[in-house]
Amino acid sequence: MTSKFLRSVLALAVLSLIFGLTSSAWAQTGVSTPAGAASAPTTPTTSPATSPVIATGTGTKLGTINIEQAVLGSNEGLRDMDALSKKLEPKRNELKQQSDELEALQKQLQNTGDKLNDDARAALVKQIETKKKSFDRAVQDAQEDAQNQQREMFQRILQKMGQPVIIKYAQENGFSMIVDTSNPWPQSPILWYGEGADITKAVVDIYNAQSGVPAPTAAKPAAPKPTTPKPAAPKPAVPAPK
Image 1 (tube, rainbow, N blue to C red):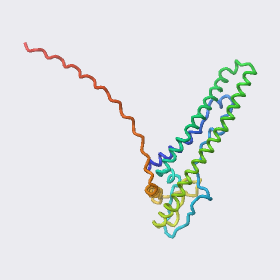
Image 2: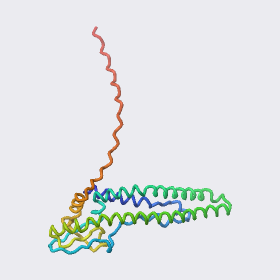
Image 3: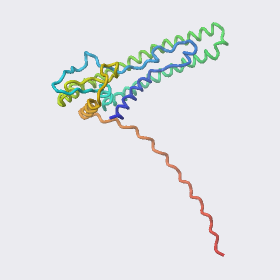
Image 4: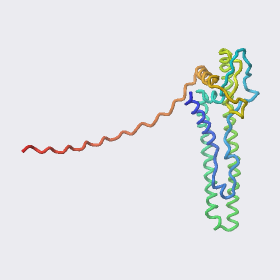
């Protein structure tokens, strides 16, 4: 289970890196870093309009669940996050190319700016500013698109996991309430909870069995190259007896 959750965290990190493009050269010369470059897509959260209704049960136990881990750590969540990362790869490459072009222009300004006349330098600065504005807009649009797709995926899985799995499990196992621990204190009111109260793994196991989505297969390591055996060293000749 832990490895599945680690893979989901890595998937989120990939999305963060897709649009987290920045250039130290811009900051060094007074041309500001793109506004959208430093921010990363936010983890989708449940919305009141689409979240399943969580009713308190008649049991006596209190339980916890990390909804983010449950959704993104399920086989379906891991599969869909991987598919989304691959889908966004062309956009990442496009933004990376724009970032490289801006950085090259900025280096050109740094290296030759004092040698250019006023008109040439002004034209180069204008070109950088124009490209940067275009890059800012492209990054912002790409971030919003990635966040929307991630949010839709998250909500789709959560809807299937809510009533059929989480609430049913809580009712069948004597829980009166289940609280979400996705956000740590003080972002959430949950200050502390024991691991024994957490039902995340149980819910994910049940959901995986019901969804029929197989666990992602780990990439096979490259086969080692065959080594050519070295010829055996010749044995020293034994002198013939006299």
